[in-house]
Amino acid sequence: MKSYKTTHHFADSRVVVLVSVCMLLLWLFSSNILLFIGSFCYLLLIGTAHGYVHYMRSVQVDMKQENNYLFVEESDVCQLRFYNSMRFPAFLTLSFRSDEGMDWNGAFTRTNHFYQVQLELPPRAEKRVDLTGIAKKRGTHTWQNVQLTVTDPFNLVNLQLQLQIAPVFHVFPRMKKVRIPETKRWRYGYRSAIASPLLDEMKIIGVKAYEQEAFRSIHWGATAKTGVLSAKKLEPVHADRYAVYLNLVGQHAFMLRPDAEELIEFTAGTCKQLLEMDCSFELWVNSVQGQGVLHIGPGLYRRQLYKVLQLLATLTVRDTPLPSKLFYQTGFRRQQVDAIPLIIGRPPEEVRNWLQVAK
Image (cartoon, rainbow, N blue to C red):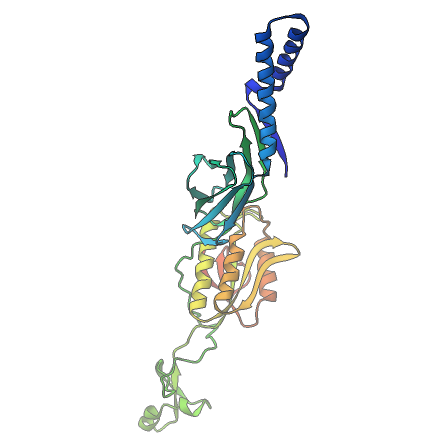
């Protein structure tokens, strides 16, 4: 644990040296006992202050965080526990700087995003302080420069201890309401039409010639009326496999768009809508980390959406994107077979057969 001391002007080291020299001269060459006693009491006071803060440095500070993951505008409580095991009262100040993405409420003084919690602990006592954090922006947020200041009763000497405790919040983006576009002529989906309890399709939009479909696909009414074996023409349905592409690159390569945050919210809303449709989906993000493009493989259910939100919470303006052409070439080559691409952001220029969710 790193530590360093600061002193009041009255207890500055140069003043202490000067008073020490004066006391020595008075003791050798003067008989003024009052000045000698005053100098001695001053040195005794300063020495006691230094010894006090050194003795009280063993005060313990712990932190308990309830949740690591929040949505924007959600709140969580961080509980700070201070424990004084010494025989003397402890005069403490906990200070920290918080990211702009979190606001805090509690018993403290605040200057912009700098917070100070001041308290006095009786001997062998424990005190808990609750701080309520409110998420304001998407991203990963924590504290910086967490310091515990221990001072003496006269506030002459301050011992500042660097602490390694800090909450870490992963704030998920908002999920915008999104309508998944319907496929046109090039792809009709893979699901069967909605059926009644008697397995009779309910989304019948017409009659067509019989083409060796299943027996229950025969439209008996039309067959009896026309004398020609006819089949039911069913309404096309959505596909059940999608690949979501988030491209935050603007008109110039390696430059992020100013509305990147809104596109991230569209991505979260799209994945939520696919979850409600019981579709399998994967996510491709135009950002390079490690050896490749950010990618979440195909999956279903809430755990897939949870993975997506975790990934979206980590995106920052410092991420390195690829040129759009290279990004889409990589994704289309490796995506799930027969998955329909859903494009969010700048679309591909040379590839067709994709759907635009947000541009």
